Length: 237
Image: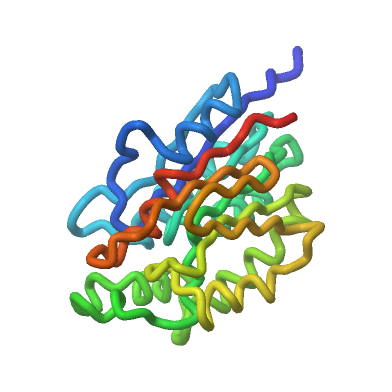
């Protein structure tokens, strides 16, 4: 019997209430294009009212069961709260694998670990709180950032891949102080994690290019949205 052909699978986990990738596609488009021939693309997005991180995880678990015994190279991209799903998916797929699944680099754009709440988490009640949904996803009574960080710390050595993270201290959604700053300390090994800080203007760091324009003070999502829309992954050298 001939060996099964290697499949290239791209898995994207969108943000908390991201229900589509708007044209021209932002970081998702450059990521897909950089992978070349992709046999299968999986997009895990918010499906509308009633959906949640936990329900989206049910879909991700189904993908783990389907992929785990394939001969495949899996590439993972997460944005915002989708980063919680991305790291959980990657580690679960590794644990379930039969040795035929390998991984490309993992990219996390504007990750929000949720070591603390921010104002948005309490703005529209617990039913619309990313903090509360992350607690349910990880099964924690306290801040879900602890579980997120532990899982993220395990990824590079388990997957044999570098985890690339793009953030901005000016991001008011994925809050820097006591949140992303803490994650950067806990996941700071430069041999395992590549952190790229975006700021106003052009930044090129390795394969990551990001261009942020001056923020609109009236839009609290401005920087967070731009980290998706204006980040590009450059082709490998």
